[in-house]
Length: 148
Ligand SMILES: Cc1cc2nc3c(=O)[nH]c(=O)nc-3n(C[C@H](O)[C@H](O)[C@H](O)COP(=O)(O)O)c2cc1C
Image 1 (cartoon, rainbow, N blue to C red):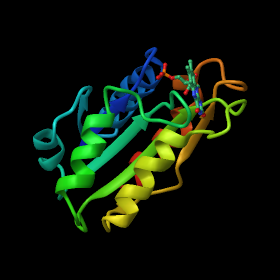
Image 2 (image 1 turned 45 degrees about the horizontal axis):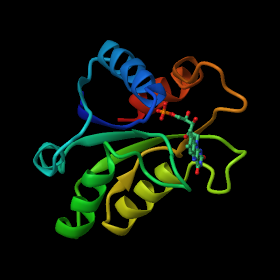
Image 3 (image 1 turned 180 degrees about the vertical axis):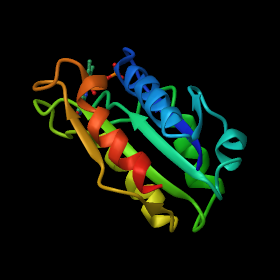
Image 4 (image 1 turned 90 degrees about the vertical axis):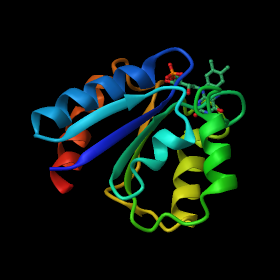
């Protein structure tokens, strides 16, 4: 069973609701799960040989929310290579905006560049189509947890 850090980027709480759903489901599968909002680099570093799940919405014009942007900047500046990290991404957005799910894609691209191994595809959740993102994400989370 895996030790999983769930790192959340949210403005209005939708991504946090998805993260809490993920915590519950993954714990039921026997994984050890902790959620981080306003995460520090040190909190991330505790997982570089483990598993992280990034659950982030998009704000502004394809930007990461303010509560996860500092973590992104620190990873970009300080951690060049994280080849032992396994990760997943759940990206929340709204397809009426130009940069659909830009925040999640930005995080995924950084982790790819740094040699981390993504498990599964990025889950995109479109606020135009999905009323309850935490319900929509359930199947993906179960399948993702089973791949760990
Ligand atoms: C001011 C604002 C800007 C947004 N910009 C984008 C964007 O550029 N791309 C996108 O896909 N979604 C964008 N969204 C949609 C949000 O990402 C989406 O509603 C999401 O579900 C919010 O999740 P949260 O409650 O976790 O922040 C924007 C929403 C707002 C209110």
